[in-house]
Length: 112
Image 1: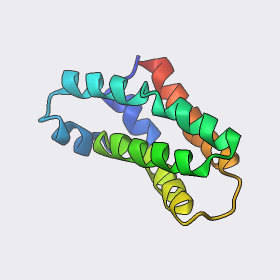
Image 2 (image 1 turned 45 degrees about the vertical axis):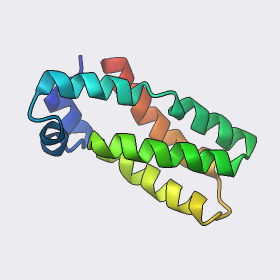
Image 3 (image 1 turned 90 degrees about the vertical axis):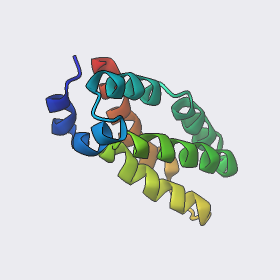
Image 4 (image 1 turned 180 degrees about the vertical axis):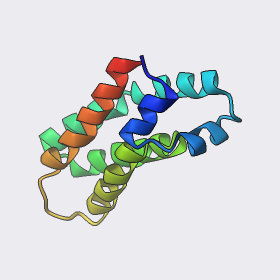
């Protein structure tokens, strides 16, 4: 089961996340569930696999806002980097870059 302590072990800034949810832990966890289960994670992975970097940018940008508002730092930081690289159309292996993001997201979802 996901707890505040477990989120902190992952590096999540729970103080900031809770503050954005008016200190209401139950509400924060509800928002975490919605954010982590956002279908943009799958859409981003698919766009990256297909080489559709414009769609990947749109999905990464949207997710960056979601995970940023939830203070999911271990997902936000690499996703923000990816978003800026996609914006600049930098040539890189985005699929490999996405793998650890998805792994952390999947671990958190499994513990919800």
